[in-house]
Length: 274
Image (cartoon, rainbow, N blue to C red; front, top):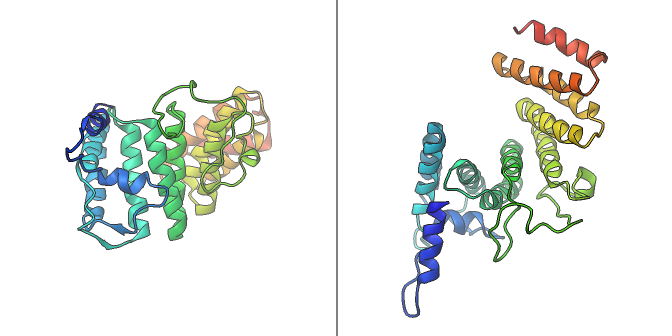
């Protein structure tokens, strides 16, 4: 978190009469409850550059995050807002924040929730599905979404029985967040959004992650495994389809479902791929 900590320290040390450092554009756009009405002209270029950098693994994610944090918000350089562009920008920023060694899982969730909200506003279901999936991965990284004045990891700031609606996913009790199962709620949200977008890959991935969480608490995993197996069959990339089918089948057999029709049929499908 060195990059973030450096910027926050400089901001905190600004004394009376000194000019405070400019807020990074990514924070101004992606952490606001109501994002700015205009977007900087360079937004699409920054998004593309950050996405290209992230192909370089952990080092690339750090470089992408540094790029995004280096661009200060400039109210004098405005263009008509393109909600989808801002959503895509916040999605890439959230992914960089999640993957970077210098990043913050809680801030990543803030960015990704904004991306999901804006994707909804733009009517872009595939983009919303990607944002929900990345937000679930950030939640799995170990930090709850940030709260005013709080930047801590772990369970220290979680309150027993606390529930919070997942952005764009309705009643938390309906998707498993009741009882403190926030991670299940996050992946249930990702699954819901992937199905709405018709994204077979994200549907299978979300169903797999959700079924693993349910199995850990000895819940019935059959429904989500069925969803995952059905969606995995529709993945175009053969190697990715085989890998997901294998993971789903292993989990199904571990859950005592090896002799069900859905598993037997999927085993046959998997056999043709290997």
